[in-house]
Figure (spheres, rainbow, N blue to C red):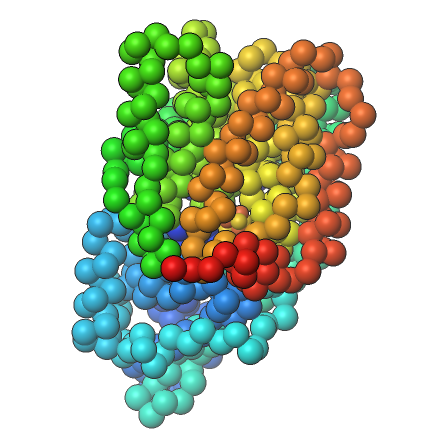
Length: 466
Ligand code: SF4
């Protein structure tokens, strides 16, 4: 099994990888399909109009997650990693005003969001909780082409056929040609022992089987620059987050207090925790505001890894750029194993799959740059994931704000604690990471649907919106 570090860490926009980035990408893919020869086009038929329907979790929490807007932006030909977040409102207003989408290279299609974009809560589509259907019609309203896409978490999008193939070929995927195709933590440890390489070195060798070293390093640096830029922007913003909950941004004021404390040399026994928390909150406030973020492994959990990397640079005197690269490679190795064997999607397994996975990835990355052995790294990831097991996804009003912003802060704190605990041991421990991942998968399967990104349970129904 090989999942590139650039599939785990993807630059995009908030607030959600599965509910914003995925649907935007699906709309891009549908536009490509329209222009392709991959469908039986009746002679003389021309696509003149488009329709979109959102199903399952995309329908339930789509408004809060900006899913409809993401579809509109995607149908305008904009991609998550390229679109300017500051221009998105303008693009949506233009489509609403004209009733047309005009992606580059296309003739332009009728698409009135009010009529042609449907949040269908009554018809879940079999296959996955995050489903959407895109349809192309001719001038007489005849359906020419229709395609279902599933947004399976972390910004990944598949068609029905691809989903079936993925489910069937899980085993086949593990034979992809890379030197260390570990599909489980056990295989990872065995390969590390026989090769004498660290997890980061094995992951690097896998990546370098498909790209050269300079491309890999430049890509890793770009990912960290985007993460770091997101922290810095979040620390400068003030005011209330969009969406109607009236949630106040807090990262800036907390950061001001911490800086004052830092300058005055005041003793604070929770110093590291406070810095970790403010970095994570800065990212997730940016995510909630629809800003530029990096999936790590999702948008909802995008604060954990950047916060712990910034903590490493801030508090570890030996920290350097090479360390950041190893950190990201190790974290991606763990994220890939979790995604392959369970899920990183809140709509599939609850928040244990999002913030829990992010915390495990961050703990592993930190243990790696602290000089941990592969066993200590695996132990760090396991501790972090184990103590998120059972965590539900219950965002209030479907917005990725409460509990998500603080949850990332706590995920980062747990990651650092897990790494520290693992580094105090010799790597031998009771619960293997693979068992923990399997437990997360089973717990997610058994979890009531209302706790899986539908906003029909938990905090979402017990806190009165004002
Ligand atoms: S509760 Fe967790 S899984 Fe759900 S939207 Fe928030 S961060 Fe994502």
